[in-house]
Image (cartoon, helix red, strand yellow):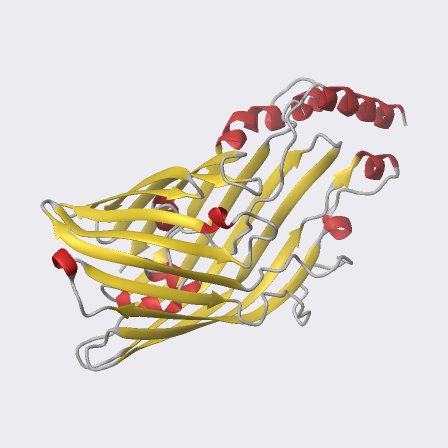
Length: 372
């Protein structure tokens, strides 16, 4: 009891020394692409390959070549986690070390889309397909100034399949669908000092939630017939999680003892945008896009949090630089395409409050792919 009291007092004093109030209103996504985030979050009119499963499925007809992905881990962290990791793991007074991170959101995400197979259209075939087994794990851990621990976290596991078809004589209209079956193990319940004093365990069977999503996405892209100044113009739109994004199916419950409610919904999400593409000097396939996405996944947030502006080009044979604005914050990325191996890196800002410009979370991502 003395240890519990000391912990409560220590947290009370140290939290009050921290005046910054942590907002916890970030947009939670099922999947995040390093390529997209380097382009400011653009994906509805620009997404390729793994984006087929969580952005606009109609873009499966735009995949340049067939691909079989054997290995493609993607990891992202924020600047707070890199600064605070020593506080979580270091020696000394554990209470003081952890409490010193109050007000910071500590973010990490690990994803894989493997194995995955992508088949684009051909001269004699108008349809495209993509199939993959996908895992996505995200953690956002923070000590709030109201003496609670926020531990938004989830692990998603399951297959996805995409089918898209090109319509019209010139194949300028594409329509696609994606089906998902995804098991989620997660939690979004805060843990307070009162919970600690009342003996509530910070264990998975106490705060955990599990359920399975069965849902689908639809999307469309249109390439316009006119080309002002040699620019190929296109537009796209998508609806993700048409059935509502609910993890309310319980036919698969591999973790015993969890008595919590269904996991946090993924929500029905709308997105649309326009893009232009052309060659300019040494910049090949220069693509610039402006989009609004996460509509429906931005409760009480400003519309400007859904805006994304980005560009990507190819320089030489292997370099693909990217730049953009994500929710008003600058982003940048670079891909090195070595054919069998592709390395992608990016940095971007994510808004944790309801309006852009209030509370930026600077993030860094790295992805390494091995593909045939």
